[in-house]
Length: 199
Image 1 (cartoon, rainbow, N blue to C red):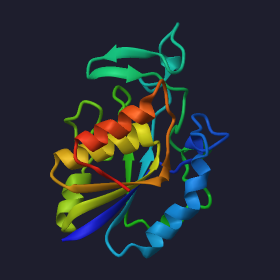
Image 2 (cartoon, rainbow, N blue to C red):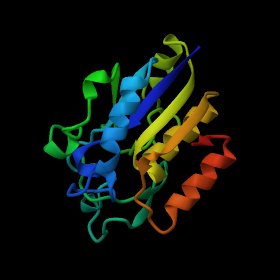
Image 3 (cartoon, one colour):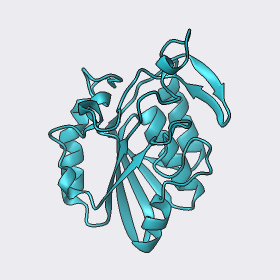
Image 4 (cartoon, rainbow, N blue to C red):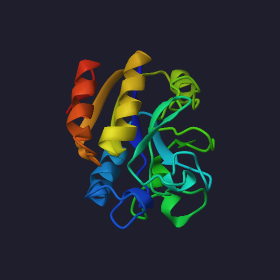
């Protein structure tokens, strides 16, 4: 059984200067390229891909500001600055990312009424992206994760992968966090509790 490498959201809007820049987010590009080049199993990249006016954008809710939270039909949602809008330069992968190495690109967050942090499911934890089926056909039983942001999309992807029965490792040096109100430490604890290996 093979090990799949999943690179999460290494996009311009999540790098410094982007609409939702993760501090030092661009520092992971070179090590992620090295990781992809050395990997001999499936390589998957995810891409946040929102329509304009997405429900997760603070601008879609009058009176709300970025990083406030509100309750959606699927649960609590952090409201974000407008980011990774379909076809925009901010939604593109970082220019230096060797995206040609990816066997598959999974776009997520394209349904206007629901956000999607995880590579596997929308934020209702039910609607699948199709990645699990793809990995099953590729014979993957183990997953390695790296990318942006550690405490949101990497976290949700790792937890869902563990819930689906994969053995999961997160390469912490190849991730960066937003760290909203201690979310980095909380994410680390949640992954450890779920049996995710942090390396």
